Image (cartoon, rainbow, N blue to C red; front, side, top):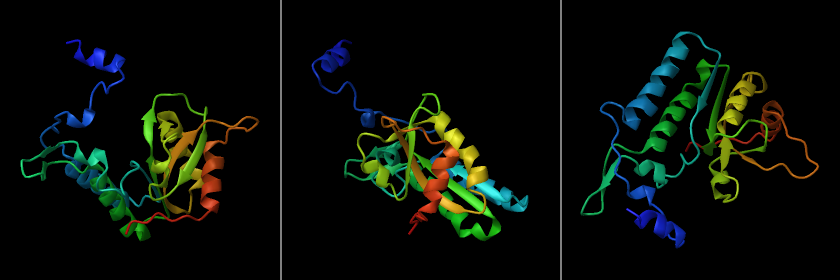
Length: 199
């Protein structure tokens, strides 16, 4: 029972979380929740005549090999993977459904945050881009949940009349720099007119 801590002290990996066996609860697979569930919400928004839809997804959706897609799968003896995984791929498919029905809305905002932290909002600077470019940055790939919430609220005003998908993380504030509000950061990003590639 001391193997984990001893390995950690020796500088070895404490645990390879990718080796853990994980099972989704029956009926709660990514396809059911992240695709069919999200699709049902989009359909309801259309039926109710909603003008603006905001979806919070996850970065990594453009990479089928992302480790999050392996959760819930089992590697077979022949090397193939079976089971109910592909969480990011199902999220992406739901987002594509929204974009395919974009004529039903005046606005939509799809937000792909990096790794989520429990830090307070407003401590760091927003960084936004598209197509998982931000994953390549090894230093800043996370964001506080509270900053994501502020960005969702900002999308209601700064994102009005816009149809946009974006990736977002935060970085430390440079010396002498003031922290942008979520509204300011989103407005600056929208001025760049970057388009997320769902192809």
